Structure formats: C-alpha cells, structure tokens
Image 1 (tube, rainbow, N blue to C red):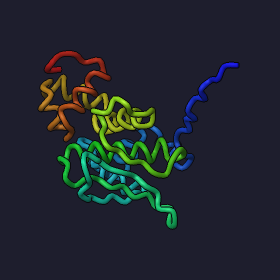
Image 2: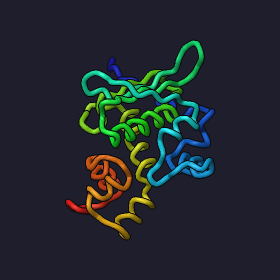
Image 3: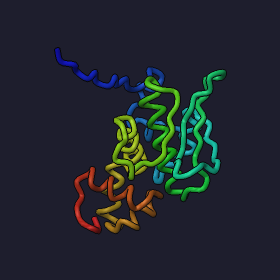
Image 4: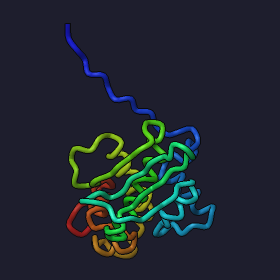
Length: 180
C-alpha cells in the first residue's frame, strides 16, 4: 500500500473581497477613492480595506505581520519601523495580498523575509507577486521604461521600492539586462 501526500488546500479570496481579488481591481478602487496610485499610497489603501496599520520596531529581520483580533474581528497590520520606507511599502502591499487572497486560510501571517527566503510557501510566493504587481503595475512599469529610464535605480525611485523588487518584477515581465 502506498501513501500519497495530500496536496495543500488552496482556498483563495475571501467572499468579501472577491471583486478586489487582483492588483488591478485594487488599483481601480484606489483611483475611485482619490488615492495616489503612482506611486500607490499603500497605507491609505490598507486603511480603505479596513486594516489598521501600526509601525513598531520588530526583532531580527521580521518585516511585518497581519493578524485578526479575535474579539473584534479587526485586522491589524504591524510593519517594522526600523526598515527602509521602500521595504515598508512592499511589506504593506504583501500584507494586503494576504488579507485579500489568503484570509480564508488563516487569520495570522508573520513575514520574516520576502525575496531572500527560498523556502517560502505558496501563500508567501503569491503575496510577493501580488505586492509587486500592485506597486509596479505592468503598464506603468513598461511606460516608465520606454519613456523615462531603464535604469534599475530610477525605476526603484519612481515606484518607491527596492532595486531587488524592480529586478524581480522586470524578470517576471520578461525584461532582460543589467539596465532594463
């Protein structure tokens, strides 16, 4: 008799956010509410989604967390106040992705590292891709490269993200080269 490993259950988007299940949907919501979208004001977007954002020093390389309070049902996002503002922006977008895409699976997310951890599970990988697409939408990313600059540093400055995030997003969008 052979044993088969049961595959992970992949519940996706909670029903309350079905219409906001993609980065494009969230960007449309942000625009409709008058939020800045290039670069995206992720803190305001989190608030718009009913998430309370707190900035606190965190230990080690912890980037952030997202937890649902048991008594109130309110989602609290904690961001490492010791990290660079660009890293904080990515963390906020990453935690928004967890809220939108993964809250049906869990009510607690603790994120230690994003790009350096090759062991990340499917939810972490999906949250990273979601965050990158939210902060660097494909059309805006391509427009900036074609009309402004293809230098990683310029793109990072424009979208207020790290150079590493730009390089990974560029690779996802099939750009090549040291400068894009």
